[in-house]
Image 1: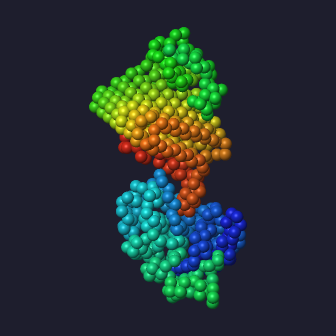
Image 2: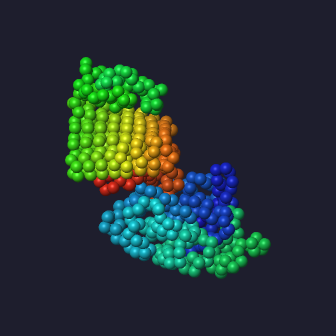
Image 3: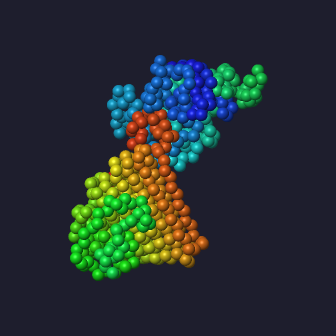
Length: 248
Length: 325
């Protein structure tokens, strides 16, 4: 499904942030990426989506055999990749629902499908908003405009639910969420997840993994995955931190 | 002194005249006047050529009186016969005026609007100029506001020629409030210039200025906004914010905020931003599958529309948002 091989990437001044990432994600899997601040976790999602602030020095990223690195950003998204950044961007003046409809229709156009009808779209968004227990205010507001941190994260998962991607890369989706919101968002992700899809979660805490059971847990440090394991690894990291890995 | 005599006394606008700092004055042709000015009104205190020109070119003035406490919606349209409009708005009246594109066919299309706004009145005046080929267009507004009155001025400029809006507003009564929102959507070699003087003549008055520019091609815009807070005018509040997005390398904007404050207990701010489309917003939209060209259009549209969102639900808001699509 998603294959990342020896991915190295730099920022404009030449500083290399990713120093050879290898990751294989198969359908039905949930991968948790943990690691100290500044280790390259957020950069990884932006690089595979093609953020212009980063330059890929080396490596390959494929989604179902297609080379993502050669594709336009919108085509990467429409091929089935979704990323949710740590700090979702605010876009005042762009209505949230109109934006969602345009994004969905862009994907449908890419896949050669007709535009979604008004009634069908309304039914879809009503269903997904109910799933995430979102109130009506989300419909009329600008994209993430004036939202609290938690509201932004919930809105990100709404987009994920509408766009129905194959692989979702969720960067610290649990930050800014209170206990109830965390449960709602996690349940939403579990509901969207299916044996044909995969999720990559970046998190600092076990609490999200209590709701979304990871298949694998990886530790990213200094731009490389230095350790991988099962769900028990996250528990050990929560107890002991990261230093023991380097000592080992 | 009549308007023609005053123009002759002032001479043609020059770049070293601070009212015309950013305007391409060399493109103003010497106007032709009738032998005598029909209006006997004294213009000896008027300093802006554009405020005098409609009176000097046109003998006739359309006067519209809005009665106390009434509600009025009107379309205003200047032409060769009526280059000047005087609006007398009564106490506690509510009025909405849309200025339609003019049919003035002089070398310079010049219009003048005088608003006398009564106590407690609520007035909106707005226009959305369609793209047209008028080479040179002046619009001058002279506004006097009584206590607790509100005037909301909103405009969209998107013509192909060179336009200049000049506006003098006197807040003469406590609680008077003036708001202006101007949007320039320009391309090619078009130009739009705004020159404002807002006078806080008494205590507890408010003026709000928002201007946004979307400039493409080799277009130019300028915003020259002065706020004058008189001595003893305590609790005056004034803000000015100009935001510009340059969509091309050859477009340019000039902004000159001027604050003349003769009293301590006031709050006056100004700000100015110039930039390109927000890279993070572009990335966000395309990362959701929206093609770059569509994303760019969405951001441009949102930048423009957002300017008018704070307006109350009114004919002005509906019309301006409709024009922006």
